[in-house]
Image 1 (tube, rainbow, N blue to C red):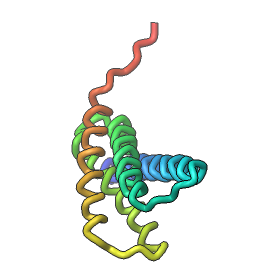
Image 2 (image 1 turned 180 degrees about the horizontal axis):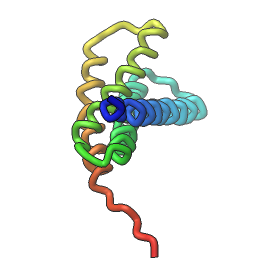
Image 3 (image 1 turned 45 degrees about the vertical axis):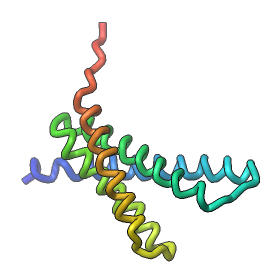
Length: 128
């Protein structure tokens, strides 16, 4: 029974870390946009997509490093966890489910899968 639940903690930790990366990148871009003085909504959508992709990649990479196997699957599951977390924040803040939310998921899954594959295949450092 303990072996079956061994994936929950790494998946949760990597999902939270991935979501934190998303929010940190969004904060950095928002502060840059405010300092430049232009707050065009057309620039926020690509920034949002890039930050979600980077967060999913980081979360997938970290989850695969924890699990040490099946990087593609774990990366996609972690990207799904990041999506659920960020989408729930969006809906709590009053957002509505649109086609763009589905597009975000379709962008995050491959990013998490790539991060997972790279995380599993990363070699360990050798100590001399």
